[in-house]
Picture 1 (cartoon, helix red, strand yellow):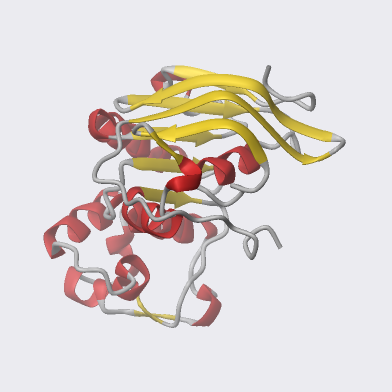
Picture 2: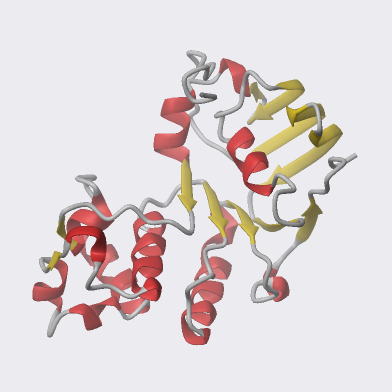
Length: 233
């Protein structure tokens, strides 16, 4: 698999405020060009929307940016000036990347376990985010909510609740690069509004990338990048 072939360097980032693509070519196969001589600068403080048809390579572009396809591109991808292939990509993802996907992995344990994954977060920050997205409704009060056991495979949770847990899990991590891949797919209208407001509050310290077919986030987008079957030229 691509993951097994992953190239990871030794350099560790201290901070992240820009990601620059310089004449990048990226193909998943001979018939699927995703980037062609692509030049682009992603900057901290902006929200970007990645669009394109199903199968056009939107998620592949995000995987490329986070170091999963270092063996598949030519050109330069520089994270704060450091070539991506020279970065310790495991350290980069752990410390600087939050990735909100459609599919959420629920572990056996409490709501707290599923948000923190044993990371040391401020309890009041977790509480704020849980209240913000109304996950406090999973239990009669806060102390019971956080420590409530979630059933195996989250059969006792709706799709929207699982999506909110996923969002809270990634927001409390406070990563510099925040990626939302169809993160609004199971959210109700109010939760989408809350998420948009939260993204606007935190954008000054982050590079935010949003993949979405819907127009829910269009009013807060600073720039749009379209991925097509012939690649972004």
